[in-house]
Amino acid sequence: MSVHVTGISGIPLIQKGDDLPAIICRNTTFEDGDILCIASTIVSKAKGYTRALADITPSPDAFRISGLTKEDPRFIQAILDSSTEIIQEYPFILSEVPCGHVGVRAGVDNSNIEGENIIILPKDPSAECREIRAAIKKITGKDVGVIVTDTCGRAFRRGQCGNAIGWAGMTAIRDFRGDHDLFGLELEITEEAVVDEIAAFSNFIMGESDNGIPAVKFSGCGTWKGHDSLFFTKEEDLIRKAMKR
Image (cartoon, rainbow, N blue to C red; front, side, top):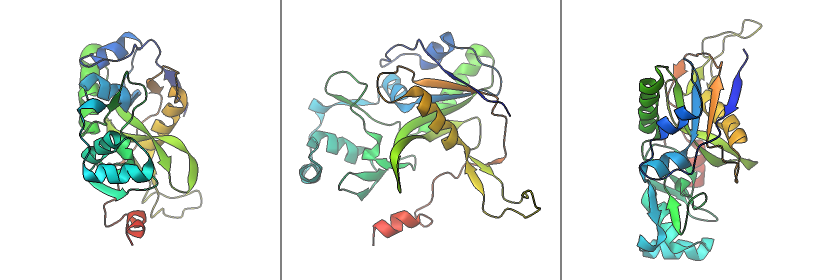
């Protein structure tokens, strides 16, 4: 396998109402089977998933948590509003968001946006991927996979990585169960989170500061069989159970 990775430059600062698929297609070409990774930041900005801090009224819980974290209580309230479950409050809020993703501060971000405003993750990132994928198909005639990424910390390791929070045009998991290794041993538990691996490398290309590369194209990834059960259920999630003891 030979994979070609291209950071898509020339994308301007995105504003609410911008036609994101059209902008991306003006700055690159696609072939069938390509995979496009897009930073959640520009998806949210194009759709208007932002809030002005001045419009947020903190609740008593937000004031209480901000006293621990030393963050703006309005920012804390935005995190609470974006979460379906708070797993941990301190030293940072760890929560689940509507799509099932668990992350720090519910993915609420105050970087790469003008003024005292914050960016909220899309509630249904996979639906955003399907919409972008359909638009690219209409513009180019090409069948392209789409992944929306967000940067997340990791348990047990220092440093952040890109994670897939939504995807379309591929399965999230490459399922090796039932296959055999080099010595004929049947694989029983091996499931590879391909969308996260692709998202992580796209984040390496995008960068975390002023690189200005919010979209990355992968060519040559091929196809794989698998499923979309990327997120653990609450019953399966041993770390969440341990944290609640």
